[in-house]
Length: 295
Length: 240
Image: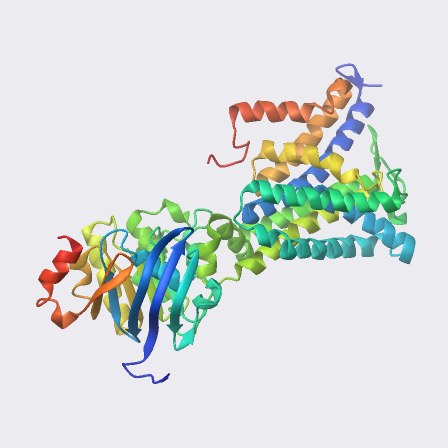
């Protein structure tokens, strides 16, 4: 068997695949965080909980109502997105313009409550959700085995990321969002319903997280605490990429997944720390992040 | 209130307007009236409360009391985006050109609030520089071009009352002259204009009336035909 740096190619490419998959989730989650931060100027600590809700809702809808994967892929993000908009409308809106610490505490508290309630009901041992029949099995690429579902996750995550980037950078609605990020008050002075735009933006960012949650349900362990684990890494990704940069969030997400995968191959003990190491280095040399604008 | 469309139609009536930023009390009972088609200036020193008056009309200050009627409609409880949709176009002192948008995106950003606004072609005819640079980043334009863009942006929306805050500030004389021509053209179109202006020599030949603002109050109202008679009073207020 061929080797690269003393590691079998199959092992290396397997870890790279896992890295790209993780990276796809980091990208989807940090993208939502970046969109929300851009317009609302809040750091959404409830983002992990929304990701978890996406996965939990998918499993619960299947167990209780037999709702299949394809319907859940659409329905779960919508339900969670609406839930997010309610949080924005009834809670976040009341602390607009206050210090960052308030929104941080509020979203963190909301996340803990959601997580706590679900833990009480479902425990933390993990719920079962099987891969949709269409994606059972995989294909042998010669140097590695590629499960169909993993290929699907990468494909659909890339499409959603690109679609979001396109919408924000190239459309009229995106122009509202970009302009609102710079000066929301003036936008409102032009006749744009900024409070509505803020609700929709928060809902959209939350939908992206829930969408990632649905994608994760068949391959990761679905538990009420799954969001809090990934969120810490995603925050590191956002810091590395630069807060509020859409393209930066996507590229950094995938890149960090790959770096994590590579580290797992060559020096496994460092794999869970490597992203934070990168974060420290980036903060030392580019405090605004790789793609962030210097303040 | 009368809703006539004649010369005396009151487009804006402000009575007893107080405005606050946090604890600071900026406006102390502003009273003024602007009729349809008039060009009215707010003159005064820096910090007199002229810009705040415009912001208060847009509901962009911390807190307001009093009354602001636009087209006979009380607007004190309206959100800023509702005020804009009454046909009010606001051009802020800092111009508010968005750096993440190109010139054309900046130009087409504000939604059309009334019919009868200028088309993109008409705007590009009026401001040929903007056409040439339509794909440049908004903030890469010169100060004069940015001011043209900030003006052009609200002309497209069909707004029929423009609130213009210090549009000539820091601009070269040739640009200021161009802005004067633009204002004359807009006035001929029948637009109502409230102009906050530091440059009295720019404002004097254009305006129908002047309000002198000091300490957040209207101290004097001067019609264009009274200017020469009241010049010394005015000089006293403006400190020239």
